[in-house]
Image 1 (cartoon, one colour):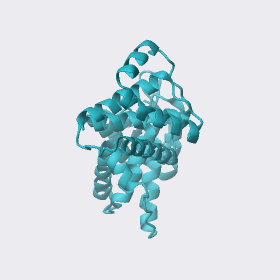
Image 2 (cartoon, helix red, strand yellow; image 1 turned 30 degrees about the horizontal axis):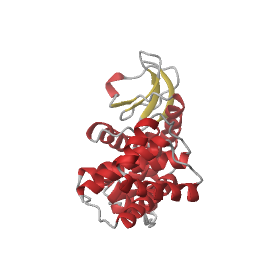
Image 3 (tube, one colour; image 1 turned 60 degrees about the vertical axis):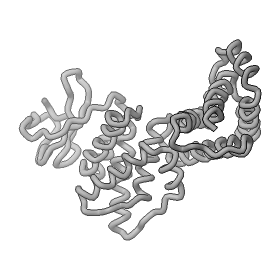
Image 4 (tube, one colour; image 1 turned 180 degrees about the vertical axis):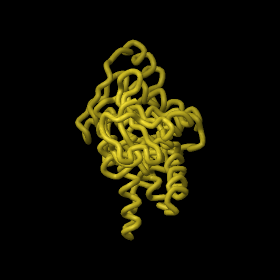
Length: 278
């Protein structure tokens, strides 16, 4: 394989058999190398192939600027998210994590420690992502001897969450979580109930609310396709539907977003499951 770009001493860019740009890392693999020279296959340790060309180029720029040091940690995190936890995260996570971990370590070395004001909410509503974040902190400690702590685990979790949604901003995760909390408060107060946070219905409800809230904030309206079923279910579940209307009114007033019939139906089904458990 021929080198098409040298990123640093330990990382280069080449083409695979499908003519896709890939990042190849290994100790000394780019040392005194130039574009057009052949790659020493014996030095190859890791290969990174991203399907999105623009994201691949952004990752190349990050590695060129701050080295490949934390790319391997980012890869472990992405792999854990996809394979162990079955989370659908976008390739952009490689870019945001590599850059973020580098910045977090630099801040720590400069004596700067950021508090994550959403830490408790992230731990509560995004347990899988937070679990990966805490594992990432252990990997970073093994690599650097630096313990970035629980606040940073939550920040890493927020990047994972962003990669699950159509956003690259952790501030959007904050807005999504705030909406989830607001909806749950409405349901809790309206029905005068306490949630059983260990129940399957509760976990399904939270999962639904996370992606529902992301659609609301992105203004991605669900198409009405279940009108006949909606009318039947509403008629049979007037008590639970009263809570749905409270949520719908809050969202329309606060976010200028009117729920579709399908969205109301899904909310109704989840709320009914919660009530059935009480």
